Image (cartoon, rainbow, N blue to C red):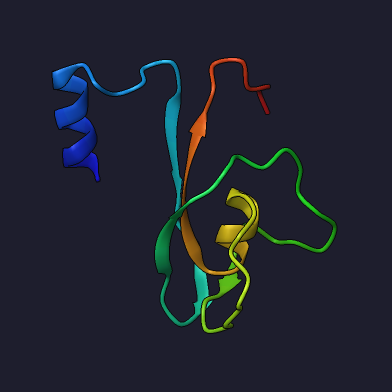
Length: 87
């Protein structure tokens, strides 16, 4: 993915108005799942721990944002727009 973005940047076809954010879960069990492209979370839901994940848990639902993705064992790619709030 980094090579592809580097190529797009050199060709002038990548959107430079945003930052690419990649989060990889720290798995307490199992291995990280596939990389998913999801929106940036606007908040962390009660009871969700984005800092560790049991990567063996299966789910039929696709992650809705980067926090949910990482908490459920997926690596997450999100675009951070320049107007995104800090913190």
